[in-house]
Length: 248
Image (tube, rainbow, N blue to C red; front, side, top):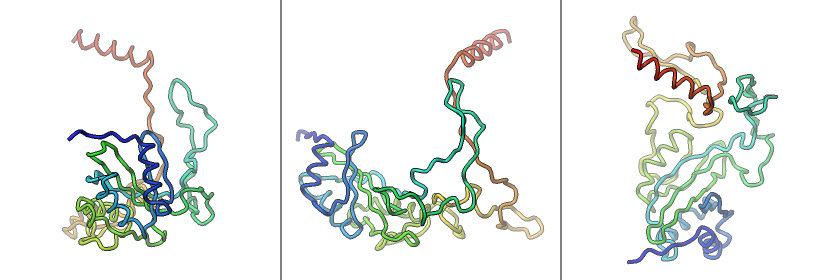
């Protein structure tokens, strides 16, 4: 059977017509369609996306959580400008107690809630991809319906989002942590989770067992990723290294 090709804009328009008000937001960016669906219509909409002949998104390729805490805020304060030598290290991190003031944040017109679950779908029949996003209605305890009844492959993906972001998928057949340890406290992919963690593990020779303690061996700090730019310095260094290798 010949594969039909649907463009992203055609798909976006077809989705708006078919689902109407059930789609909160739909846009096309970087050649892919993203739609936002309310939790109340998520399972119904995803079932239609899988079964309707005009869509046929048979495969769930990925599901992940997203934390929109501090969305749109700059992370660094610096007076420097970008140069051909790379980004300078003279920066001061804005992170501090109370930095993530969610209640008094600058409101973004699209991302009014904190936690979302994002599903990536693939239609073999129409040779196109789709991203479906749904925001949890509550930030303190984010709850969304499970999609395991629509795509069974969502099982471990939802467990991962639960583990790392704390998103509860209502109706999931076996919702438990999948990556962190049994006694782990918190959700490490949340924006307000400390980068050094809350506890560290070591072997206590006197107790003859592994013990958990508050982090003491790591100093909290902010870092700037190193930027490597291709210029004459690197080519000269490579030539010198090659000459040394030949001499030896």
